[in-house]
Length: 197
Image (cartoon, rainbow, N blue to C red; front, side, top):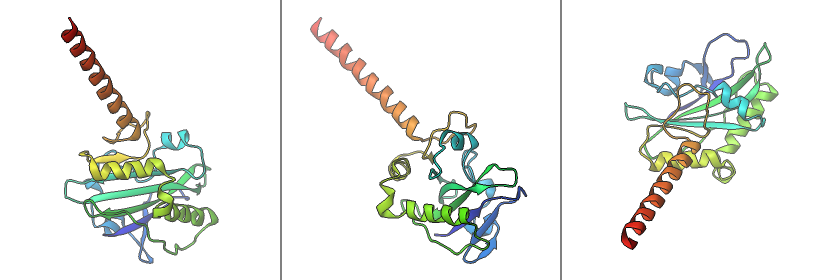
């Protein structure tokens, strides 16, 4: 099980800076995977439309993917200040997880830590602690679904304007349950009608 931090691009360099075990590494080195192996819906951060819909500064977005290679990948992101143009940037924690394994987060001392970056890291470390996870209902629900459902991609938030959507989100789950419930209700009414007629 390996993990790394994806640092916010405050200078708008277009570079993905990863940090692991006290050193800067490429994303591929940080997780021993290729970016080509990631599903199209797996964002290395938070889709802009989801950030816009969740204005709470404490907002946390999580994703889970089962890769074709047999590796599971977990990501958790939160706001970490602004870039040079004033746009929101995020800090992301990525972790390879053994299939069915438990997600945990390791705090690291990041170089050049700004107050916003320190607050973001503290929020992610606290959010993923077993005691605090119950307060992040969507993250907890997503992790539970990833352990028990058959899908390969999951996200803690639904994004109506997100181009590549994961197979499972809380909203999709609710919609599926409603359709199944209505189908069962219709079947029961039809059965009652046929038996009583």
